[in-house]
Length: 372
Image: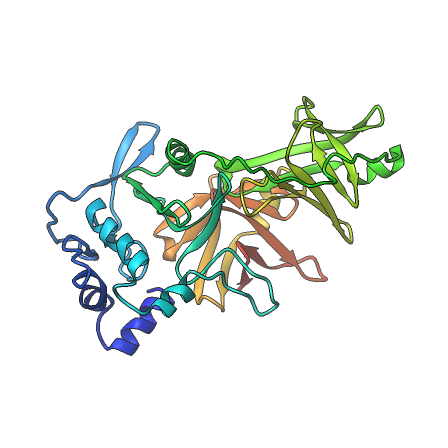
């Protein structure tokens, strides 16, 4: 059960499903929306989820998700529209509550992030938007996005899991939301500066941006003929980085993306910001590495997150290292990225060693798992 669902049940003294029906779904007239956790329940016109395999498509179900609060809401487009109308009119809850929900959260260190209370903020084609994703690897994906300035909302869902779902979602949006004519203009954007060959070499390296394995980008930056070039890992030229000063570069002479490097000890990274998205891509310096069977065996074992009270198991089977979820309910293959950095389809796994070179745990998506 998610923490929020657990809090709702304790405060309301009702099941999560009962609370949503009585407090949200029924008052809004969402007659075909409910929580689905019963495998034996017959639901008229319910879509079946599918997973694509090498042989075709396999039916898949979410019945193993017995803990409510994540992934079990069944709805229809008409009911989603009723829910969207409530976001605009605040039929349920006060205006103050809805304003708080749609205000960007501030972390304890003062950093403002692109999340509110249950919503994520994005910028597309120059317009501010808010919404949420439903990305479940076993069949169903969905996305909702509302543009307040245009008063237009988009909601789409499908019953197969594809990593390019978001890309196609934004292709749909682009049919209706054209780019704003006002472009971001930086007065110093084209004020190129000259850097020596030695200064340019500071930025050389191999860099990796990682969102998931289907949206992973890697390149090599190298000085060639006194110019800083961006290359593919195979050595093909992508573009030149034009120095602007203060570790900033223009991505190509005619480009409108800004690249900014930062240094922390021996670690190097850069951000790529094309101003279309609010959050720039972060490319970290990486030395790609293929682990031997002996090295992979070092990572085997049980790991536990005290913060989330969940465990993970890593096990070597038939020469392949696997990452097990939910007490072995399913698993993902683990691939090599760099020394002590491996990957599963959703994220890199960064291992940590103690002073004796013994592995003591790993971090994944910012969560620490201690080896036990």
